[in-house]
Structures are given as C-alpha cells and as structure tokens.
Length: 88
Image (cartoon, rainbow, N blue to C red):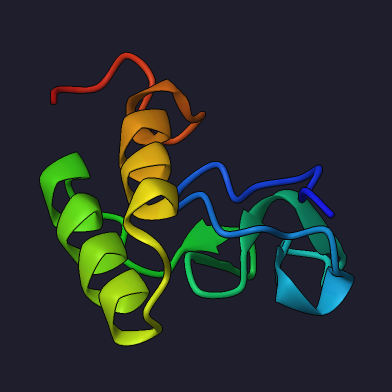
C-alpha cells in the first residue's frame, strides 16, 4: 500500500497519526512528521536542504530502505512545503 501523506520536510510517510508532529495547540500536523516538527515549530529550524538530504540518506541506509525509494525521496525534497522556493 502506497502512503498517501508525506512529511513536507523529510518525505516520511505520515498516514498514521502517531507519526505526525504537533501544532501549538497539541493537535497533529497534517504536513509534518514528529521528527521534524513539534509544538508548531521545526525541531531544527536552521537545517538546510543539503543537511536534510544527508539525514534522509543516513536514516534510510541504516534501515536498508531500497535505493530506488531513497532516490525518490531525495528527488521529492525540493518540491516540499519546507524547501520550496529556498536555496538549494
């Protein structure tokens, strides 16, 4: 089954509410995962797109995620809400 919702910062699937970050009011975010976003703010607000690419690569390789999925995630990054219109 293909995920329908992805974190708009790191591409992690967030179809399951427990994987979602939280807004200021404590509700679950529809846009971001719990590893990127808590209490209405990015956990690492100074992170660059290049740093996110590195984190994604490291985490997916540790979990032995297939290379095709890794490459797809890296390709998606610049179009996500967090990175769109930002320096590459």
